[in-house]
Amino acid sequence: MNSSADNSKHQFPNGVYPAMITPFHEDQSIDFEKVDQLTDFYIESGVAGIFAAGLSAEIMWMSNEEKIQLVERIVKKAAGRVPIIGTGITAGTLEEQAELIKQIHATGANSVAFSVCQLTEESDDDDVWIQQAESLLKLIPEDISLAFYECPMPYWRLLTDKGIEWAAQTGRFHFMKDTCCNIEVIRKRLDIIKGSPLQLFNANTETLLDSLNSGANGFCGIGANYQPELFVWLCEQFRNQPELASELHQFLDETLDLTEGKFYPVSAKEYLHQRGLDVSLFGRKLPPNIPEEFKTQLAGMLTEENNWKQKISG
Image (cartoon, rainbow, N blue to C red; front, side, top):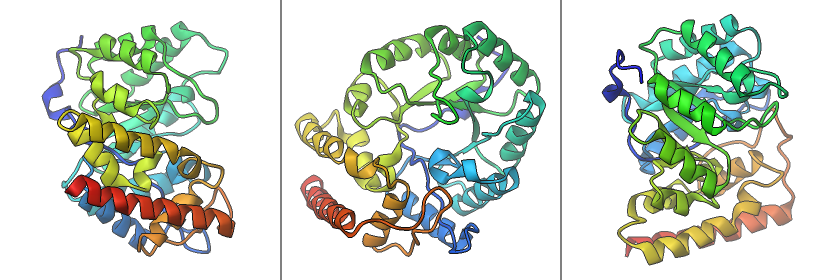
């Protein structure tokens, strides 16, 4: 393991890291005033940090300059209250990828994530991926904390045991957004990274509670855009109140069709609007239209959320 870097300063607090969405104006420009408000909302909800400019932020429809501006704004608004994981997801050569990672780091982000699938073609094997990753690391200063994200676009590539073992042993990686959605795989991964500076944050609600009980560091997924307080409570109290945690997790799992359905991320913006946040439904991925029936279902979920807030605060 690389011992030249001081990894102690890169340890991230356990808990919830929302995969932050992006508010837009009607003309599809980023609404930075609403970005500020949303950043405050997450932090006031008790999250441990923010995963900024990931796929939920609609970055596949942004320029690199916009990605940098977005992360910079979130870092500035957070003002050190919580750590920010900014993503350096882009196409292009390794040199171009490294340049974006360095620019995201320059915004003040605590760690910079790149997508596992951006380094190689889908048909390439582990050895090719590791070779490419090693080449990328050589282009990035060692004082930059790195994260990786099993982003499902443009194709979904999961790291194998070999890839995760390599990443853990480098000492360069500190945050993993895990999207394997398989508790047995997660447990194996936790065993592999044990004792290394690499921390695992599960993006999958269905396996979340089991992963927390197995030693995962927290949650970095879509659900925290809707109900961050409930996920915060679950990550903080799953050991202290296991029965109630199990009931809450069942509720969160049952809402997946609403939270992760075909209208996301517009559905998350609608839900936040119903919660009282001034967030428009405009975006770049989908038109700002949701059937009234679906809005009614979201309203029902909000009623249940409020009931759960009363239950866990008692």
